[in-house]
Image 1 (cartoon, rainbow, N blue to C red):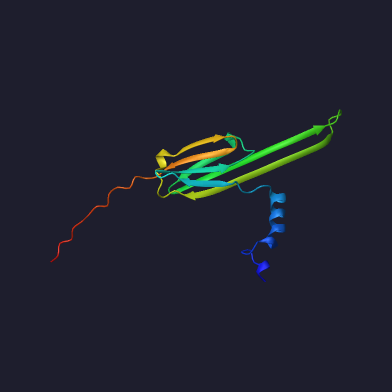
Image 2 (tube, rainbow, N blue to C red):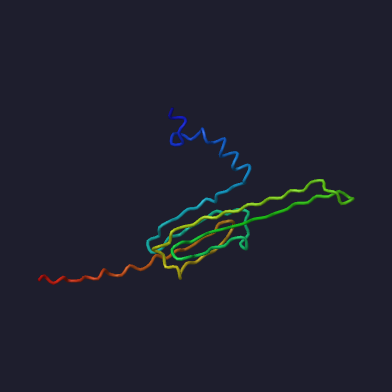
Length: 135
């Protein structure tokens, strides 16, 4: 019975995951988030995407990463007829809660297929102490 649940090994779901990967292409980009004390560093592997294919949007308390990739390959014979023609499309989109992030100071770079975001934390002010008068 435990072999049928996704919590124990997950072997039962692998054929479906393989089908999804083959049919839709790689739908996830590996993302690591590290806490460096005064900031978070988010690194997202996006191989095959060009910098121009990637957008990073901030809306209120949500940061959204999106990437779209399109490629076409044509091979024709001497008379211009197709011998092979392939098209590849891929997209990725993911959102993150950035409630405690200083949105104005977010920095982004893209190098060797890895998107790196530096997300500075908001400075926490001292809690205001208020004395309550007893009547």
